[in-house]
Length: 151
Image (cartoon, rainbow, N blue to C red):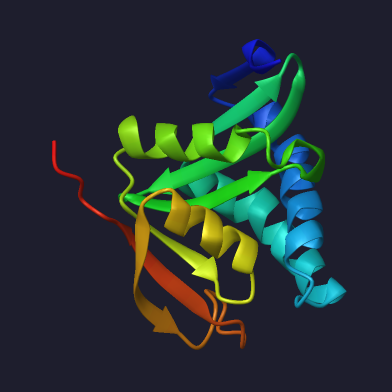
């Protein structure tokens, strides 16, 4: 089954699909966010955030099942469509972000324990905390850094 999954750089024409994956993922995992805020954030994702990062997406044949965005050594986005969770998509995207795009930092919503557990399992540690998210809203973020491993 994994053989069908490919990593590639998405095109501008893929942005609506990426925004849909983002929204589906957020709705499945961020139940603390109000609907209006998700709608607002989706507009930011579609019109600002995707252009601000180096993107990689995971496709199952033609279907985008997850994506990651990296800027300045930081994973700014990593989202997996709900129906693909637990199938290695997030891990592949994260490994690519680390190995190919030199990502070592990321932020995770404190109220999203599944994501926190995933990043801890993948070798990140919490190095700090903010009371608010990137738009100053009261959704605390945990700042994480990749733990250096002995070669």
